[in-house]
Image (tube, rainbow, N blue to C red; front, side, top):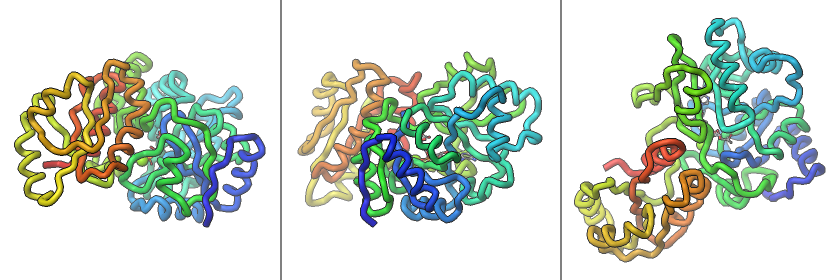
Length: 359
Ligand code: TXA
Ligand code: MG
């Protein structure tokens, strides 16, 4: 199959919608990262999604909807009318919480896990009795959902476990020959995947994956206690696997006080006998001296997060930075821990930790 990047004109969006109805896959821009879309109720196409991504079938997909046809329905009633969500399985109090956070953050980078209707293919949800849903904000994604007149299942458009794509060319690099069309919607505004949440009994929202919708924002919109999934939980929330977003070469995460530098060096010495070319990402130029004190490798590529530019800016270019380091001729990547573990900085720390090799 030959993959083509298409300008996101109305004609091309309609062309892509027609192809989706022919069980083809389309790379789509969203405000978070690019997705690999198929019709949510088309099992033949969904099988192709898993195959194209080399994704294990135990890792469920997010279903993307637009709210253009919601009319006067509540969000939950609307999702029920789309044959996605089983309202009978949600208690009255939780319904209020769902509506509050959906009203506050949709369209946008929030994915909500809900009891599923039986019409949702098991392949989409990996056999779970819940379905993850979000309303994206990117106009091209919305136009395509409208033109297809169907919810779209769309995981991030990267091969499994690899760096998420934030522009059309990244999707081509990941999935050339495995997807028919990629709609070019420019660079993603947010740059990190959506926040994934579920609602638990006792006025609790649990974050399964941190993102641009932060715990502070969720608390303000719902007045709920906000918790984060721990690792024990992650083994049953598929996809929240420990090693994720990983570059093709090993990434070593340097602790803020550099206390693990000797352990990293010992590992490198043992495993990279002949050549020790590093690519490096530091918080800012202020780290240059301290880095040079600890590591004397040949640096073939150096990037900075530029922490002073603000966490939103860092998030936007985060995966691009990882891709640049990965493409270089280095044998491994050394990264400082991102300096701000709050707001969207928390999601940056999460992605870095997941990309890093556990020593
Ligand atoms: O921003 C995003 O969410 C992007 C864009 C394309 O929308 N999509 C994305 O999809 O990141 P993906 O497949 O790469 O990540 C989806 C995450 C996975 O970690 C998956 O395990 C989790 O959502 N997920 C999906 N359904 C779930 C469910 N029923 N229960 C718990 N977690 C679920
Ligand atoms: Mg992904």
